[in-house]
Image (cartoon, rainbow, N blue to C red):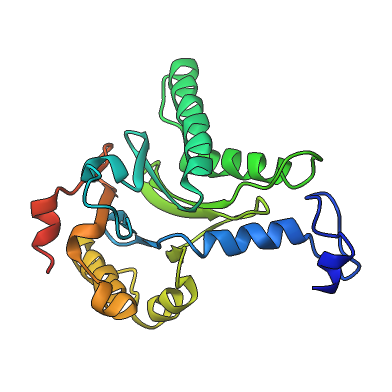
Length: 234
């Protein structure tokens, strides 16, 4: 509170005396207000399971999907301000297509997350702008393997075997540390993620509020599960 009174939170380019950029920390809190996504890299491929949150019954369900196609072999999800995420995802979609046209080959998933992170980092060091209030999770095929990455507000990114972003992310990550096993198949991984969501959400859990997509190691195209396919995991 003292730092706020002194004005250290008025700019994304101003460090507080104890080395914090307060606008970045506020943006990180925004990410944790967004509904969660879980990503798992398993023996068969990479999976993202996203909670769309509770939506108005008047909204068309398919218009609120939280897993986005970047390229046919790369998928992404976000937590935080989803309009911020849309800008980043549109940018990397263009980059993925430019790579195909230029090199006649699919872009590597790490190149995608690096570009996202570079943009996010730039918005922590320019006056007159605010940091992107969003964390992104990217999963996709790289060569013969699948990989899973997340980027944060500061522009850092890491590769994970399993990870969560958004609301209750620390609780979810603790459960993943206890129960995740890389030898699990696709169905086992999906069941694990939904079980964790059920434990975390409690009475709010509803199978119809989730998006599930995956990319298999032996295929070059992502698959999105429809409502009926997701319902089988009840």
